[in-house]
Length: 453
Image 1 (cartoon, rainbow, N blue to C red):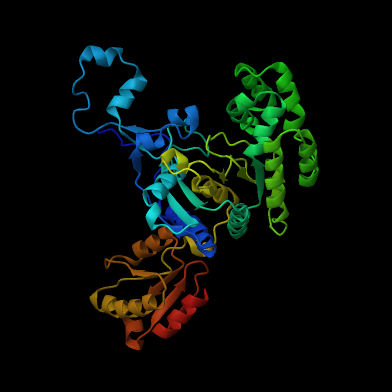
Image 2: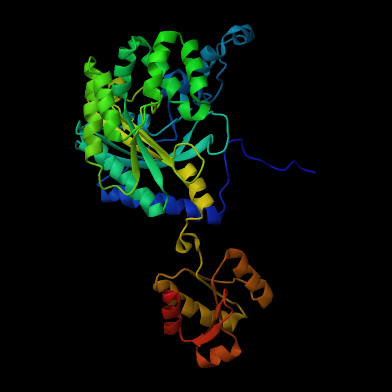
């Protein structure tokens, strides 16, 4: 017996119902992005490794899927060289391309490559899959979609404000209660200065960014492993555990960071953003443990958590003032967010928040009794579709029970029946598959009934 086929771990197939749900997510996000003046682009699934490497920190580089060069990638190497060369060096020789890890770095490459064609500030959105060689677990996949929006070419903090408004609008439309967490990398830099560990800023942010996942004791242990002195770790504790309102936290941080110019700048930026977000429907929280370990964030950073479902971050982002400088265009500021579509899919599933019309495919199925009846139904079917109503006819003149079972299996809410007697009157019997009720209607009445339901 042939082995049953399978798919790689961390990837998924999506059924028609699941795709209808996913398209509801993508379309909702697209509509909100468009309301704020963002334009859509796409970039290739694979990028040159030189574009990707070094942009995500050491941990991120390990999670890049590398693509073997086509043809004889071993050309010019002996078996002994292959056996004795390190994995990293082999990968560098054999792989010139990799699957994109996120959409932000390819976007930065796009901006630099197409700079002469762009009017700044450039507001783009992009909805495409990305790949990470991560350990698969609930809510974490190796292939998943991101729904990004970025603005480049503007230093204004109004961009951060609008991105948070977009987040609020999207989750309000979904009916999902969220907490929008905000922090600033400048504040974190100031904290590192304040505890005398400015050169350890990356180690500190990577560690405290794991607080929700591994807990305080494990974070402190990781900081110690990274060479942070016990005295400095002790100074961090009141900051990590800081509570109170956003205003109270800001007031405390102004005092704590009074001798750090960069830290106070971060507090000032955060205060401005929070002051403009008074009318959001969702909670906004200043979270000083939010670090987002990616190396390219330089200012405000964001993360969104669902309040009614246990799952990781479902949206994140931040300001990356120097990202395009990596590609030879220094001084171009950018800020962006990314919706985790796959996690949002899981959240909406768990909370059962999909609107009925979002997952309905066919509204009405026409039963096929034979050639004459099918010819009549095709004319009515054309009128139904001309009115924007999704409809289909069963392709074979088979037993009615089989056709009704097909309608039930697809979740089709109405069935149109046109037998010999209906043809004589030029009408169809419309059956409601939920209530079982039937009514004899003309084509025009059929359209009106379907529009009402």
